[in-house]
Length: 463
Image (cartoon, rainbow, N blue to C red):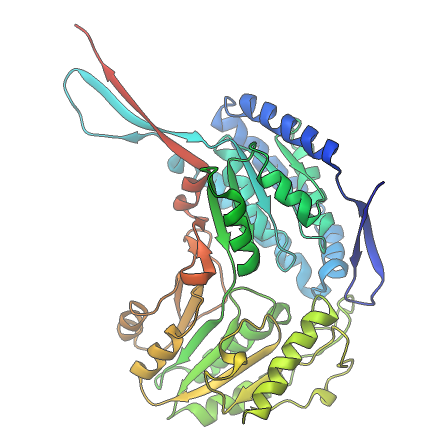
């Protein structure tokens, strides 16, 4: 019996997409085809792989308007912003294509008379990419393009919330002339995904999602001696030093906290402010937050869309209620925002002060439009609080003293450290994290390493 997967739009609760889930026969056929296709693809010259990936990017971008509308309806990104992810998809892919020759070049070692020695970068085989719904375009492309460029085949499993993203990505590569089955998607249940991981045909897993699922993937892959890349979440902090340019710091951190309705692993979820500028910062932060317009994602005037579903919004509301009951002060009246309503995905942004680390809202990932702001007396206190987290994806400091800010950044447990900006991903830098944020990295030259294995060549020349 065919089991259907339904995507419920957060805009109006309607069923936006229905797709049949792959059955075991389809899964086994896809795995076999992918493995066979990779054997030929790995021998395709890098120049041709680059050309195909480049054409795929152009084909994808050419469909930007339709993809943006689908993204809006599937996961609730305001339509005025949805096309930006198509652009970032292209920017990241183009950068990885541009550095592929260097990143995949053989490693040369020192000269030794009578010998030729070097290290080749071999593809690992078949890469399973498990993509999230919150950034369903530019997150998977971080793995798909370098994996393909390195000579691997890719099996793509998207979130049930954003199945059309998988279809659009594969469609673009097909239009670009990618050989059949080198890149495939499957709509899978959780149980079927576990079957794929344990199939013996997967050589690397790239997953973005929750800590609990990341831990489960590690268990499923244990003993199979395959690589795993995990980006599992964050509770990212910002610190506003006394010498920060306040208007700039406010503008950046408000956007960092509330863009995508706060549904970002690297979104700002907690802010520490030096006591000498605390009152000014909070006043300006709250004033700017009140300028958001909560509404339907398909309304071009909307700047804050719904969360992915009512359950996610209720989780954040519970964090807020609990914090207020423990003494936190809420600065936003939800009634001032149209559509905010308990039991729906529509939720006003919230700014909390008088918070502390005994409150879940300051320690547990919220993944929604709420941020806590704490007053600190000195740099030392700020660094201690920033490190008081099970996560470590990004962290930011706002200061006009770059040297001091960097010195503080050296002490912060994080994968990416920002000065005077936040919530941004630069494809020339490695995207990685520490602690429960996960393991491995994507992007930059280092991002190719996960999708290759070294093979040493030691050749003796006989006179």
